[in-house]
Image 1: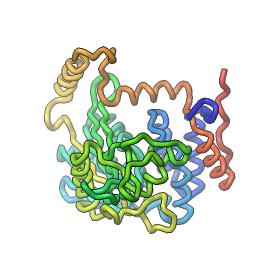
Image 2: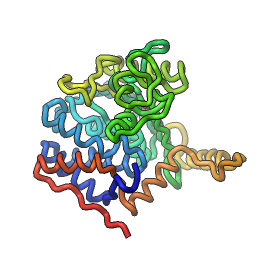
Image 3: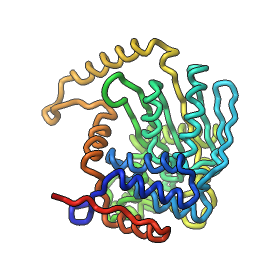
Image 4: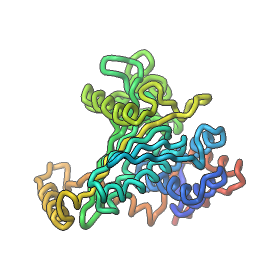
Length: 356
């Protein structure tokens, strides 16, 4: 995406636009705030594949009834276990609501396991880690997704690209956020490349015949390669069991694709493990240990190509702060989609930021 085929927009304007869209589709304001914050924050952090480019497909599926804009979310507590039926709601809303219920449970039990079924795509797992780190708690977050990764030795997608994330608070500075898919690349990046008419690098995916491809359309019909070979395949399987089997959601090829017209509800599953750190040690002691740990990490001698060691979450935070001031750059293709979406609902899309 070059400067000539993209424009910059104020993040506040994008949030206002997205909230209006969600509310027009029947989503309560409090839920619309959560959903659009997740999307725009992803853009601000440089994760455009999970950003506001997802809004048109979310809106389309809500209009069709494949995603419930105001879901009937049911939660059942069983000791330190929280079982959730998301009522086919948008994943950001379902997961956020579940985590808000789980926070006081974690303070009571120290550790809570949450298993969610009947949900949908939930954006970035990092978003939920960030929310929990504000509570001085730690989080492990997982979700399954439509088939993207073949079983090792196979050529047909079976497992989702199934991300896993960890969030750990620190006393000063951004929290440690580790957010990674089980595939060599998130499926959203290939979807975005296809939308922008761009090739993907070699080694990312195979076509339907099992041959390496740089064509994103062929990759979406084929399969994405697992991260680290057989290790990524095994990780994807573990997450599939945690999110699909243990939650009672769909698993493997039974998870429906948000981008496939005519499919029924996706029935995505999520799994979260929430830890109240203060039950292990005092928070002051924990923060002291983390500060020492991170300082030793940063003191590691660097290679000739590197002048600084970052911990996971620092670059994400730097981009977020930069774009809070400068705005978010969106491709003309995505801008056109958002403009058409707004026109169809009687909502005007944002004005571009004037360049000096």
